[in-house]
Image 1 (cartoon, rainbow, N blue to C red):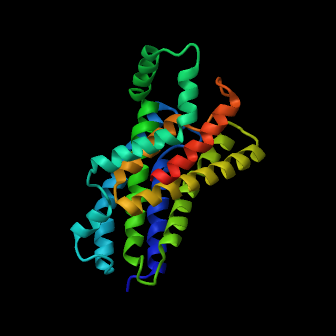
Image 2: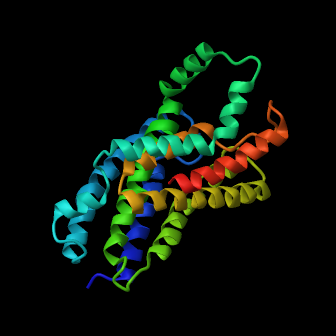
Length: 264
């Protein structure tokens, strides 16, 4: 009998497996930005994703959550939907409308330099990790796989849509806390700062997870989630010391957040 408790157990295993894949077989104390470490992590995560894409559907079918392999794959949201994906691109640009205008506002901004810097970022091992690999692999695990575990329970009394929207992003947030270990052990950051950084990271990654979960559950399109994730990784937190007029900048930040929320 497929139940909420079974789904919780499965989702915990899937969510934790990503963090385990990152760290297993890696000597303690190595810098996460070391190219060898990055390549090793990417290889292990690739293997994990392939195995999970095969094993999880088999488990879900065996437990009676789905009737066949095809229905599980459909729930992953892998079918490319151009309109919804472009809508996500527009939505995330609305969210960052303040930082984007501020960036173009800078006196020394040149399009040629901007494109050169962007190309250099996208072709470096660090840029590939942050802007391409992490968005694809994390969204596949924490959106496609984890949500596919709960979708059969939504609406049948076992689990509400609201609880799924709130619980599963928390798994995504928890998965980012492991960075604190690196800060403390490798970079020797004080424990108080590590705890503060961890709390902040847990908060904004969980909130981010709620936003993309909402889109995924409405549209069943993982590619839109990947676009949002990639641009968020690229843009990061808004700068609170803008080059443009501060009042205009902060108004744009608020407007961007409102427009983003209603555009998804």
